[in-house]
Structure formats: C-alpha cells, structure tokens
Length: 111
Image 1 (cartoon, rainbow, N blue to C red):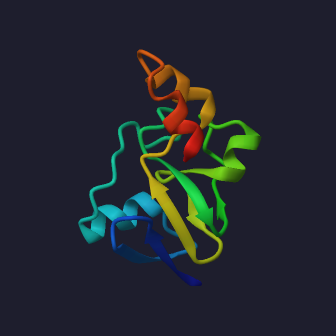
Image 2: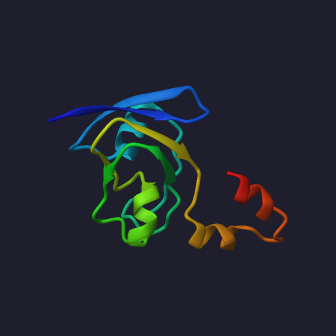
C-alpha cells in the first residue's frame, strides 16, 4: 500500500490517503468537511478539480472520460500520486446547470 498526501487548495487542510482508500473516506475520518451525497459516483456533490496529481476512479459514472481527467469524485477517487484538489469545483457539463442567472459566467471562466 502506498500512501499519498492530499492538499486542499485554499483551505490549508491536508490528509494522507493510501491508494486503497477513497479521498472522501479519509476526509470523513479526519474531520474534513467534504460535501457528499450518494457515495456511488453519480450525484457529483463531492466533485473536486484536480489541480495536480492523478487518481483512479473507474466507478465515477457521473463524469465523462474527459471530465475524469480534470475532476475527481472524492467518493470514488483513489490517489495514484500526491494530490492538490480544489473542492467544490464542478465539471463544465454541470456548472452551467448550477448557475441560475448567468451572472457567474465570467467568474467561472476566470477560474
């Protein structure tokens, strides 16, 4: 079992996680406030942008193959390297669904 460090961008929080554990399970064990709902890779509530590093998440059915390269569903994601994750960031395919009035389009493009 290999252990990796996961840093959460902008929070000052970090955890260690083995390649056999999900990021979400370690967050919950460590008291990190990671959002989640279904825990089966479908709802995207636990989504995080992968800033650095790699994960494996074969059961992350809520993401397209392309999205899975840049986003992790923490309930399914197992680290394959040290990681930097930006929690609460959603794939572009659902980001537009979350915006109700379109006023955040410019801000989202700047991220």
